[in-house]
Image (tube, rainbow, N blue to C red):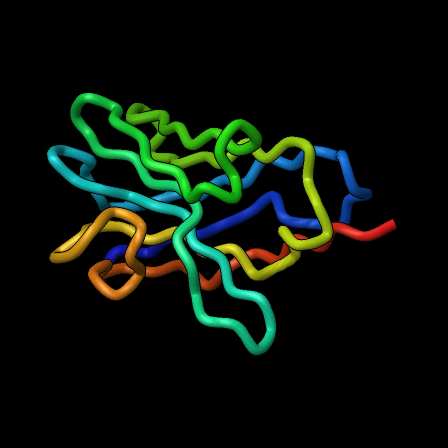
Length: 124
């Protein structure tokens, strides 16, 4: 089991920014995907952004391209999601995931490890 602990969620007004963090203890990044996903009430979990190490190739859902940036700090074993120009429709529980076993980088079904989530609420 790889503990993944998200932080950084909160409430923000439309147009605002937040940075989510995901600390992964006991997990090495070599040749692995890590990703951010979100789930709104009554909705399915959807992929937001993912990153592959090594190389740093990133993947984004169309709905967040140009607004969100995924990155990682290998020395700190931490994954980040910088979110800008937030919209009410970005409101959801955000989860980080690690170790893609199958499928595409933004498909949540293929990830092995999951955090508990952090809530993001965008409202005026």
